[in-house]
Image (cartoon, rainbow, N blue to C red; front, side):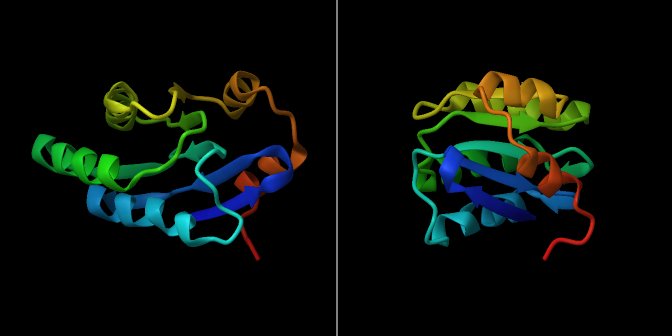
Length: 132
């Protein structure tokens, strides 16, 4: 997982690729909260395209309980996914949220339109194969 905070447009962009357990996803999500530029009101684009999340229902329930205890995000969250299991988990996740509005998208363009942002740096970050 990697992330970038674009403070000038109030946005956190994170990208997760590969195979992860829900516990690993949770630990990854909590890492950006230690960044000095982070604050809970950031909007977010979370890109899970190309990510396989290994879990069962029990894992998901534990994940949601722990995430809801530790998550302080209050901005809008756009989740990008291309897998049916990850889409279903994203939809369940969005239903459990009380502090933020979350939507699931298959394209970056639709996510950016929903967040009302247009910034080349988002596309550059998500397509950079060799991040600094």
